Amino acid sequence: MLQRYLGALEPLLGEDALERTRAVVAGFAAGSGPRIRAAPEEFARAEKAEQRATWWENVGEQFAALSARHREETDESTTALAAAEEHTATVRAETTVPLEARAADEARESALRERQRQLPYDQDHTRSAPRRDGPARGL
Image (cartoon, rainbow, N blue to C red; front, side, top):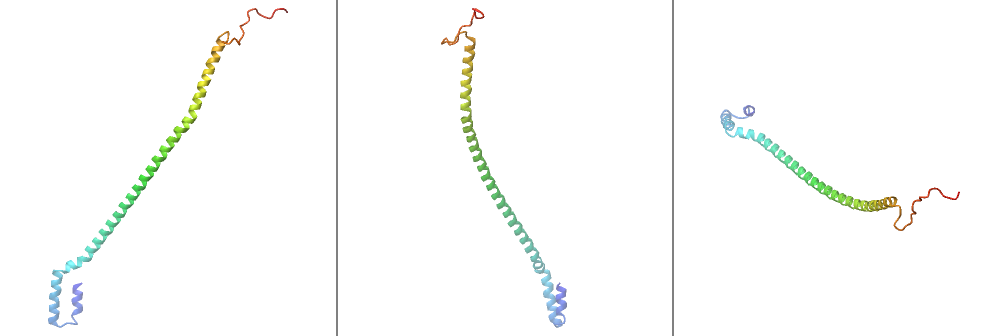
């Protein structure tokens, strides 16, 4: 690229000016030229690294937001589960207590009927004694 520059200057400069220009260009090519030539590449690498860093920061923020949302959903689920368990206990108590009382009443009545069936007389003598004389007489 520097050779093209010198080639473009040849018709414009005299021999002395051209030699001085060649010396300056050679010094530039040996000294700061490579650094200047590498500068755009370094800038591009730095810019790409900055873009990656920004991308990773955005990903981190998205994960943090997702984690917060997940935590909120977990808290809501835990609250709903506790409310459902409480409601279940209430319904179970409202349902089982009357059923247990009814079952106890029926068990007592059944036991009483069984005792009455086994006794020849009821305690208040409402049942009559079994007949021992056979069929009715007088026929």
